[in-house]
Image (cartoon, rainbow, N blue to C red):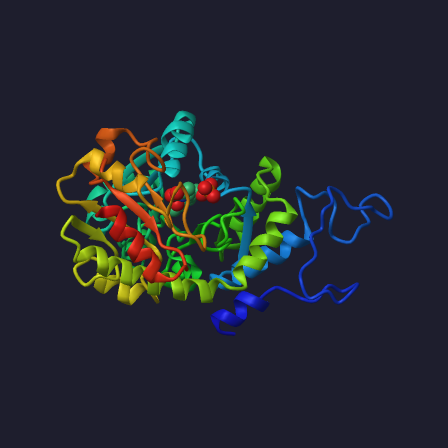
Length: 384
Ligand code: P1T
């Protein structure tokens, strides 16, 4: 099946009791057993829920993976992956990543003894260089990347990084939130685990918070399913239904996100008051050629900087939008504008942010699927 057909049909069957075409919301906490241990495969709703099962199977199909496992948020999924490790184990992560991911690594798991090293992985050579003999003596267990990265839209070469991790027996996780499975399938490029903040493009309508992990390895999937039940960060059935509904239009939405964002990026690039636009669809982007190889489109996210780097001017622009809403999050049908330094990436210390190239004046856009002329007009009046 091709992507659009899988989005609508994979894992989804008419309800066996009524023929309902839409997966029912099994709003129940428990399931009646005939005799102790004799049941229909469902015991308690933290452990299994039929609405969640359908969504998990659908997500696995979209990422060309064997197992899909859902959690109550993207960070719930991140938490589950980090619980695969023991004190002393090291994870090497890209230095440009969602602030909450940095926060759970440094402020939660580092306190439990996990070790983290942050490296600019947009150059795979830097991964080789970062792997000291000590790191390679079994200490480094995982490499963690986002591509494109949040919020600087840097591209990381998944196949090149996977070749390095495989040669050293290290696992590779790709946070595929910005691309969505419509534009990029990391498992096909050699990644071991794909993570999504389902909250974003998969849900697509800014009405649900959820996370997911997709992978092929049976043993790791079994452990992650154990953690899902044992630690309890599960999504409710209503949310699973909303995401299943959202996914049915993922391919159509992503086409419009990409089309609109390319036009918005081109508009911003020629604007005299804009000094830099970070969007992989622009030929001037350092990852443009890689994006053409690795992705099927350039996505709906971009960030930009105003000439002069003036904070009051950046704030004035962000306060002046009529169509873009100033809010955290991304990937919904409506356009959003975010100030990473004070919002999504505030949990990364300022020196750390600046060392990685994230300026306080950076403005991030999640370009929605409205009429692009209205979006460009809104940018024109806000930037002035
Ligand atoms: O918000 P949650 O569903 O827990 O997902 C966390 C997460 C993980 N990975 C990436 C790449 C993300 O962007 C996020 C959440 N990001 C935002 C809320 C944001 O505005 O960037």
